[in-house]
Image (cartoon, rainbow, N blue to C red):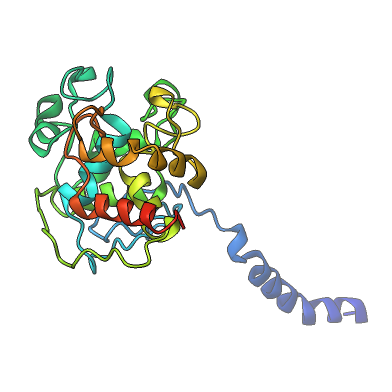
Length: 254
């Protein structure tokens, strides 16, 4: 045996072993599809590597979402407009102006309690083209709003009314902390910079201030005589929300 043959016989097993180790790097292992399929109650948390669509909202069950206060205003503002899913038009057999109407829509198939990924009400929020809801040019629901609807369905799609849990704080009311959340919840679905229903745009603080200064904001929210009720269907703004708007006006629109 010559020297070259001896050296090859000595080092070849080591080279083969090293090649196997290198060849087994995780990047080279086929992992298959990673499409998100939510098959367990995980509080809305994606545990399969999908995109987080919760928008930072607590979807773990440590806080409580209530249909009348948290879910219905989103549906009314974004979906229950004339010609769409109000209690008059009932487009495609869908009415989202009350709990009973939501649960009866599409023959009871709009919402499947406990199964958000199999509920049309939730799935259409992520559709595109003609199936997108709300339809363009209306803006999509925010990630936080979609997360609320998802968790409500996941927890059984119940008609819970949490009632008033805290006193209404109207001290030091500011636009960012107190007024914008109300506008986003109850108004912006119709009165944004794209749709401007009734030629009303409430997408900025200055625009909201203009409508507040004219008396229209409080008038429509409280459904006072001589004003068009807003939202036009479903429950009106709460007494506390209206009181905060009044306090914001009295405090100089901060």
